[in-house]
Image (cartoon, rainbow, N blue to C red):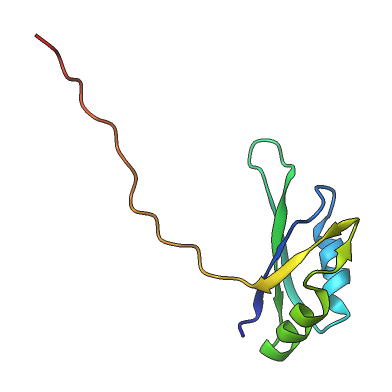
Length: 98
């Protein structure tokens, strides 16, 4: 198991320090990132926690996945790489009709 964990179904008021405190009970937390909307700054309800070892990450998943945190059942699992996007559509040119 990797050290970087996905944490989903977070309350919108959950902060980085809240997550760090929750995960610190299961090992050393290297980094925490709560994902926010660029324009509003509001949490999107998920984030990432990086633990200092694979064993600590596994312990955190076992202990926290499906547990109540702030009134919500959180989802904790190994973070997967973001899938590569296919490039994007690009706009079509102007097409005149005769």
